[in-house]
Amino acid sequence: MFRKLSFTSVLTTFTETFGLGRRVALGALIVIGLVLVAAIISFVESSPPGTITITSGPAGSSFHTNAEKYRLILARNHVKLKVVLSRGSLENLQRLNDPSSRVDVGFVQGGATNGINLDKLVSLVSLSYQPLLIFYRGTTTVEVLSGFTGKRLAVGSEGSGTRLLALTLLATNGVEPGGGTTFLDLEPEAAASGLLEGSVDAVFLMGDSASALIMRKLLRSPEIHLVSFSQADAYTRRFRFLNKLVLPKGSIDLGKNLPAQDAFLIGPTVELVARAGLHPALSDLLLEAAREVHSNPSLLQRQGEFPAPLEHDFRISDDAIRFYKSGKSFFYRHLPFWLASLASRIVVVFIPMVVVLIPTLRLFPTFYRWRIKLSLYRWYRALLRLERELLTRPPGERAEQLRRLDHIEEAVNKLKVPASFADQFYGLRGHIDYVRERLKSAVPPPLSRTPSGG
Image (cartoon, rainbow, N blue to C red; front, side):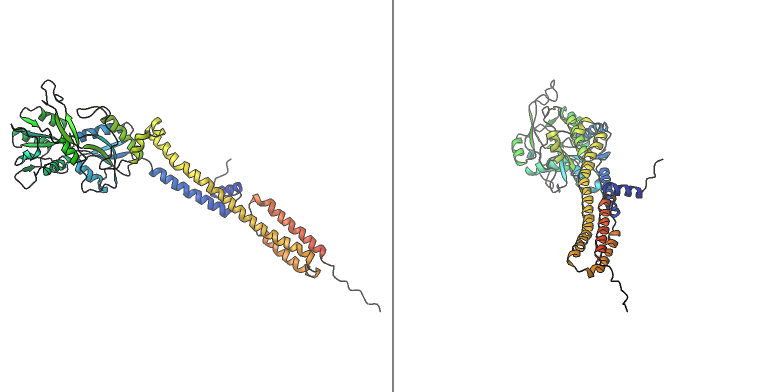
């Protein structure tokens, strides 16, 4: 039969094992309990969430398409990625900067950060170039944006990075709202249809809001032309977030030689931006997904050029820097995600707890033994002082010395000491008896009265 486990039995065992008093043992158990509770809370709170949210772009846009690819990749590790549609980079950035929006990561193109606080946002990685494609109708070649003065321009919908960049570039060419130029807030599909039908003179399109299908359709239309930025170098020097890109001759259709000559484009890079508190394990998963989705070559990038930890508007996340320097941690390289998460949290939470707790608990027995020894030594000193007085004090004080010895014995008998100090405790009591015998033997016998003779 096993003895029923109770707090009293645990306390008794702890007391006897470590040679502690009940109060000290109780204090030690309370400290252990508090540390253990704190460790469990930290262990639970440090677990990566099973669901995260990404703000993407309009349905069918490159942002949305890539977000869906991420969702499938993260699902392999049993992490759910919730994809939320948006109007583009600017709205994505506003959501990330708003704690009430409950989004964790999002795609943001460079140059969309004007006037927004970036302190709580980090970049995980730069994903790709995001070219600005400007399509127009007409027989006259347009090489500079001032050529669109007085035209009907579809510059993108509110909240899109396309609109923000378009208005910025047009303004540097003296084309601004309020003049003779008409600015249309059309969705990409409506803008493309208007251009083909003739109700729109030019459209500005980027991957954050337009689908590749719409762009391909316009590139293949004989009456529609693509602006080639002859001033591309000037733009990239004035706007540091822009890159000069080249769409090679014939890259769209070799048979039809589309485009008919190299087209010079400009565009920012797209970054995967996260809130600063994103769990490191989820950061690693997203970076792996980015590597799988964006590392292939395309018309505008070489094999392996992206993803890359390039710092632009946002500081690079410490977890991203660690990932690119050393890759995933040992557990995440060799174990399934859920098991690696469990193992890494055990290492991070419980091992430091043990390392800190053991030296701390060792102080309890040391302190307690020191206190018990002081108590015993106190009465030993009193006993030694009393014994020395046998040699220096007159015999008439023996009765007073015996009373003092009785006081010492009474005090010693009231001491509470653990079993580990039993030998010293009983040794002190034995020495008290020894001194008492010496005192008694030194007490002169009472004077006997002899009868007077008479």
